[in-house]
Amino acid sequence: MRYSGIGGQAVIEGVMMRNRDKYALAVRLPNNEIKVDVHQEKTDVEKYAKIPVVRGIVSFIHSLTIGLGSLSKAASYFDEEEGEKKELTEEEKKKKEKKDKAEMGGTLLLSFVLALAVFMVLPYYLSTLFSKIIPSESVVILIEGIIRVLIFLAYVILISQMEDIKRVFMYHGAEHKCINYIESGLELNVENVRKSSRQHKRCGTSFLFVVLIISVLVFMFIRMDSHILRVLCRLLLVPLIAGISYEFIRLAGRTENPIINALSYPGLLVQKITTREPDDSMIEVGIASVEAVFDWKKFQEEDKDSDCEFTG
Image 1 (cartoon, rainbow, N blue to C red):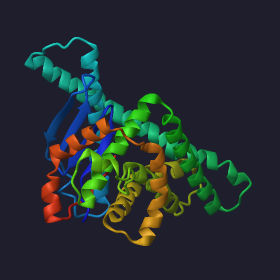
Image 2 (tube, rainbow, N blue to C red):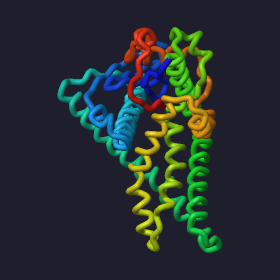
Image 3 (cartoon, rainbow, N blue to C red):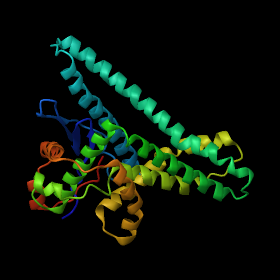
Image 4 (cartoon, rainbow, N blue to C red):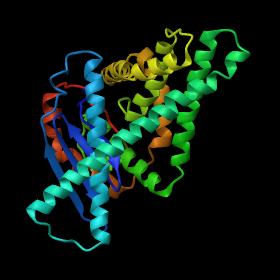
């Protein structure tokens, strides 16, 4: 069975699943009902689908935008439950939608800036402390990469201790289990999905880990005397690194080559932190999100390939 190309993301008490330009958000409400919202929108992803590296940059930005929007939407369901539901006029709905988009854009920008500062700039300046005792610039760049990986792992381990994040990671596991079982070619139901693996080679966690490794190789070619120029080059090269990393994740999703599997293994290990075993109610939410965007029965009959998508 070839891979489906379907991707998704865990959100607050739910799962967002995406298939090409269609995505669905399934959330378990406090009254135990599963609410599913389906959206379809035209994007630039398909336009750049055949351009290596560029398609990765476009797909990553698109996935990040939809993912953040889904997190915000999932949270809004519980805000409605806590407060009184109020019927809005058309004008009020438009204003609210405009405000939500502005807030989402601001949050996305702030998150991106903070991520660059913590995972790109900080490791560089910490590594310069070693340059005083280590003459080899290549070794210092390697140390920079190690520091970057350690910061990433520390961040993931730290947030994994939060109760709300633990549940998000359980839904992350449900998302992976559903996708893995689709791609195994068997019937999608709770009992079957429960047996499936909660790790997936196309996971966003693996993607971020690959970004950290690829950055070490790319930064080896940056040799400048000015610290400011080195930092600037690192920031400017982030899209290129993301594009290259996407190509590796895309390849990993298409092959069982032993070398590719070995290179994918560290990312799968990190997923043991970012995914947890879901309960049956979470698996039901995952299945609901899949079935809203993907005809898995038809896929299993036709066994067709499609473009790579990130999982959560």
